[in-house]
Image (cartoon, rainbow, N blue to C red):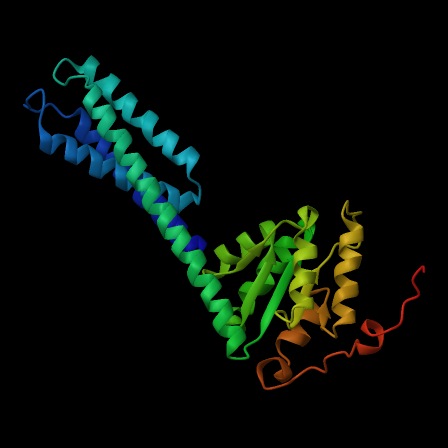
Amino acid sequence: MSLGRQYLFRCLFYLLLATVFCLSLLPVDQPSYSPNDKLNHLLAYSLLSFFAAIGYQQLLKPALATCLFGVLIELLQGLTGYRFFSLLDIVANGIGVLLGSLAWLGLKHRAELVNKITIRKSNMKGKRNIALVAHDNKKKDLVEWAMQKQPLFETIGIFATGTTGRLIEEALGRPVQKLLSGPLGGDQQIGAKIAEGEIDLLIFFWDPLEPQPHDPDIKALLRIAALYNIPVACNRASADFMIHSPLLHEGYEREAPDFSLYTERQVATLS
């Protein structure tokens, strides 16, 4: 989801939060128990947790904060003299938070399934897939570059490692096949995708001024890209040349390397 949509849901969350706060402390005549009142609590807190989860792309912290807000409201109502503290309201609030959280999890799971289906369809139709990787000091550059070139990515599938994938997905507002973080094996996963023929271009904004704890993985990834004849861009200039190349957007077929001499070689064994 794009950052713009996340900010929209954050605004909706705070608007509803303020509305619930005001309505909960207004002096009204009400019975000690009302089914409709409990349904209102359930609906309001379902929407609160749903909006918060979407706006912040998190589950636990927004849900916990929303539950604590509900408890605080009940405590304040007990101090007003014209409203009442109700455990049933707290229970209804908690159920609402649970339902809103489950709704967000279902929406997130559906988006991930759609993303996987999109990647598979793009592979079946012969569309290109690009891997986007960036070290920490280069993530901002890569995100800015991807946003500038967003129209060129409309028909291209995107793979990315860890945090880079999340940032790209938020910035472009489109699905990204997110793998593990680079130091946790994401670079090796990208290498495996290259070996399986799923990636056509590697754009890797690596930091030449900072040592990396997973440097062997980086070298292994670049080796696999060279081995399988995959073009690699390491900075904005080279990435510009590649993303604007007509070969990327037309029917160019790269020459697949032939490893038959290596795979069929005779290896001496101990007798």
